[in-house]
Amino acid sequence: MNKVLETRPDELGNVGFYMDFFGFRERPFTLVPDPDFLFWSAQHRRAYSVLEFGILSRAPITLVTGGVGCGKTTLLRELLRQFGAKITVGLISNAQGGRGELIQWVLNSLGVRFNPSVGYVQLFQQLQDFLIDEYAAGRRVVLIFDEAQNLSPESLEELRMLTNINSGKDEVIQLVLVGQPELREMVLDPSLRQLAQRIAASFHLSPLDEKGVTELIAHRLRAAGGTGNEITPAAGRIIHKATHGVPRLINQLCDMALLYPTFSK
Image (cartoon, rainbow, N blue to C red; front, top):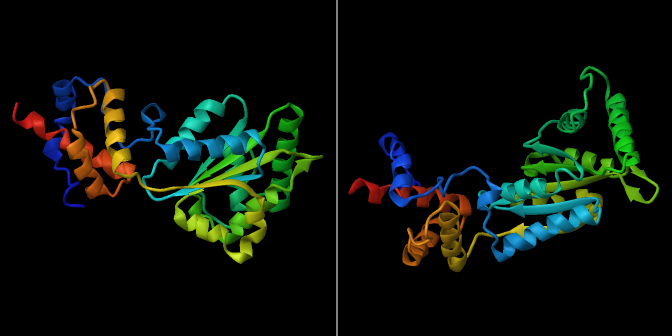
C-alpha cells in the first residue's frame, strides 16, 4: 500500500494541470479536513447525529471514535460550522500533560487569559468563574477534545471532574471526546467507570464498504466541479480493496490516480 501511494516531486507540479485537464474548480482529494467535501455516508450521518444530540441535549460527555483517517475531524469542523456561533466552544487538539497542564489547555482554548505560574486551585477557580459567567449570559460551554486517545487516564478523570461544575439542574460545561479506537478501550476500563457513566451519547466510525467508497469518490469529484465519472465505479472497487475503505487513504490514492491521464495528453 505504501508503494502505491508514493508521490515523486516531479508529479506534484502536475496537480494544477490535472485540475485544468478535468475542469475542476478545486482539488477534489486533498487531505485537509473540509466540511464542504464531507460525504454523508449512513454512518457519518449517524455519527453527526450523535454529536448534534449531545450538544442539544446538554449531555455531560459525548464520545465518537474511529480509526485514523475515517473522517472524525471533518465531522467536528462541520459541527463547529453549525454550532460555533450559538455556543462557546473550546477546541483542543492533541492535548497532553498531567494535572494542572490540562486545565491550562482548557483555559487557552476558551481564550481565557491566565498566569501559568499560579497553582491548580487558582486556575480551577478561574475556569469555574468563566463557566458561571457564560451560563449567566445564556451561553453554554462545550469543550471538544480531538485526538483524545492521547490523554492519560488521570487526565480523563480530571475532565470528568469538570462536569461536576453546574448550576442547579443545568450543566454549564459539556465535553465532546473524539479519538481513535483505543480511546473507547480506555473509557471502558473499570478505573474510569465514573467517566463512562457520564457518557450520554457515543458512536464508533468504521471504514466504508465498497458501495460507500464509490459513492464518496463520485461525491468529491462532483463537489470539485467534475462530472463524478472521472474515476469509474470499477476503479472505485479496486480503490476500496487497496485502501480498506479508509477515507484518508482513498483521497490519497485518488489524488495520485488523477495525475496519470494528464501525462499522455
